[in-house]
Every structure is written in structure tokens, then in C-alpha cells.
Length: 297
Ligand code: NAP
Image (cartoon, rainbow, N blue to C red; front, side, top):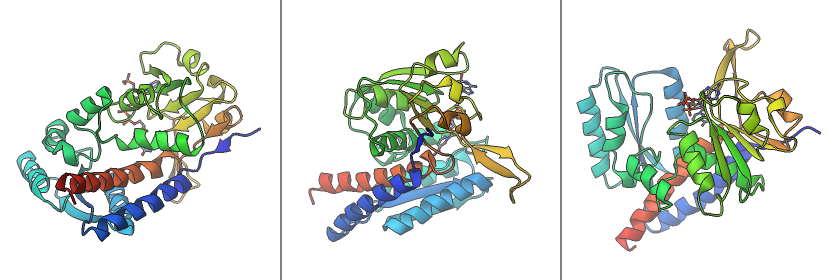
């Protein structure tokens, strides 16, 4: 029997409805969440991500403070804008869209963001807090994966989760979250990468497989245990002459073969992607709520 589809769009919509109530509650107390959005250059993929994020903010009643800067912007100019957003009381979250041009250090820019406004969860302070199980902002894509599992009724406690990919924004934080002593954690986690000799040996033992490698068909149906849950973080463009744009999007999991073996699977597009933006909105709302609590209002 083909796997049940975990519909990221519908799950994201549900979460956004609940966020809307929290935004309305903040409004009743005279507060509006604000997200500072910074885009350097005109990369089409980055521009479309930023547009989607601002549209989503608008729909929920989150104010976005937009900075679209030319490719030639210097690192010092960008750092000055980040500092301005750090100081801006109406801004609760700061998003600097990556990748940045080569002449700007993404590390230095990430480090310049006030950790209390780091709604992407990339700042070392937040990652350190995450590792220690302390209050922090969870990085959006791994957080989205946990929300998909929760919505699908997939518990993680005692399960074996295998993650393919060890990046700082997906694989590593996700491994930390899944092994956390918490309701959405308590899994036994294996992390595979390009130096793992036989990935299938690991994925075949997994109750939950999460692919975040950035390569199509890194995980296929024959690499899965029957009944496993398959979560596909990957987004890859593959040439397709039948499409108007000349390409289509596929994940890192070979959908057709995996669907025959797994019990549940996320599609690409329409799986993890919609959750990533939603969790950014969630972190921005959370940040505004924390500010209100700190102010004692
Ligand atoms: P990344 O920084 O390029 O990291 C990829 C990781 O996968 C690396 O750890 C790499 O191993 C590992 N890897 C690559 N090829 C592999 C293979 N054949 N077998 C085993 N491991 C392999 O990528 P990322 O930023 O984590 O993103 C991963 C994918 O998720 C990309 O397709 C990206 O577009 C997508 N993504 C989607 C969302 C979303 O919202 N849906 C958000 C973020 C990312 P090494 O460390 O050994 O090099």
C-alpha cells in the first residue's frame, strides 16, 4: 500500500491559524510582532524566498521592515543595518537572507544579530542553548520537521531516527532536537554524511528517515525499512523540458520507490518547505511575546 502523504501546506496552514490568534492577542495588548528582513543582491531564488516570507508576515499581521540592498553593499554597511534593527524596538526578529555575496562574511553578520532577535536560530548563542536544552529559538527547518511528525501523529520517543546530512542549519540542529530529553525528542539518532561508507545499512534500521543532503535520490525505497516514516528536506532543480520553467523540483528521497515502502512520506514541493517559513513566523511571534513578558505587560 502506498504511503500516507504528509501534507506540509495543510499542516503549515493550521499552525498559521493558531499564530493568528496569538498575533491578535498581542494586538489587544498594543503590540505587533515585527520582522526585519534584509536581502543583499538580486539572486532570483533568494528574492522569491524573501517575497514569500514578507507575504506570509503580511497575511498574519506581522510587520516587516524591509531592507533590499544592492550586491555592492559592503560588510560594514550591512552590519550597520543589522545594528539598527537590533536597536529598533518595533522589530522582534531579524532575518538576513543567505547566501550573502562572497565579499561579506555570513558568519560575522550572523554573530552581529542580537540573539534575542535571532529568529532563524543560527546564532552560536542560540545553537549553544539548543545543545544544552535551554530556552532558545529553534532553527526553522528542523523545527518544521518536528511539527510535521507531530501533525502526522508520529512519536519520536524510543524511535531510531536516521538523518542524512550534517549541515549547521538542518542536520546538526535536527539531531540535537531529536535526541533532546523532551516530548518531541527522546529518539536514538544516527547522522550520515558523505564519509558514511554504507548509508543504506543505517537507513534500513530507521523508524524515521530524514534526508537533508541536497542530492536527488540520496535515499531510495530499497534503503527504507517497510513502514518507516520518510521526511524529505531536500529541494533540487532537475531539468524537465515538459515544464514551462525548464525544470521541476525534487527532494532528496526518490519519491516513487520510497512511497511503496514507507508508511508516511512528505512530498517535494509541499512538504517541509511551507513549514520553514511558518516556523520563522512562529519564532517572530514568540519573540514578541517574550518581549511583552519581559516588559511585564
Ligand atoms: P548542505 O549545507 O549542502 O549540507 C548537505 C549535507 O548533506 C552535508 O552534511 C553533506 O555531507 C551531506 N551529503 C551531501 N550529499 C550526500 C550524499 N550523497 N550522501 C550522504 N550525505 C550527503 O545542505 P543544507 O543547507 O543542509 O540543505 C540540504 C537540502 O535541504 C538542500 O537540498 C536544501 O535546498 C534543502 N533545504 C530545504 C529547506 C526547506 O525549507 N525545505 C531548508 C533548508 C534546506 P558532508 O558534510 O560530508 O559534505
